Length: 166
Image (cartoon, rainbow, N blue to C red; front, side, top):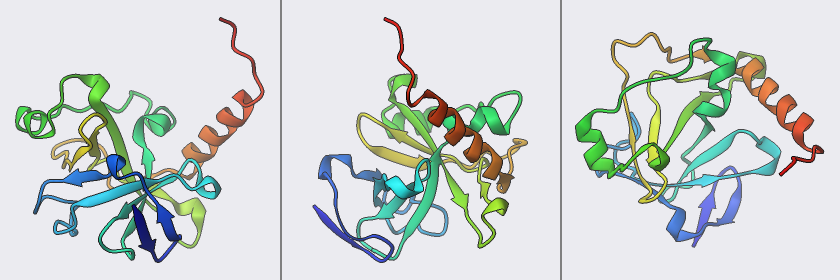
């Protein structure tokens, strides 16, 4: 399937990888848009783009939350998923869950922040998704993220040439 995007031009996406939000329960302020693709653009790694399939002008920079969480929060990033959300997303266990968070990338990239208060939960098996609001948590909407993303890149660069023993 081809998607015409404002940011990346025309991109090819495997339809089986489309992430679907429940109708009327999409991303905050974008509830009417339900189908998205995760675009892995080499130049922006480790940032991935949550690209709306039906409106090429809507794309959100996101990051796999657990890949940077250890650099952001000393005590770890943990929260509970309500039983109703578990049922709606058809989650069978932790292996079904991918957590991504929306980034805010201003002109001064060093002021980049991540929204840890409203993570997006994706069932990697069914491709169903839901954005949660972690009310009552200490997680911020604008948690500084620039240095965490840089540390993640440095760690991956350090591992790039290493050989793992079996």
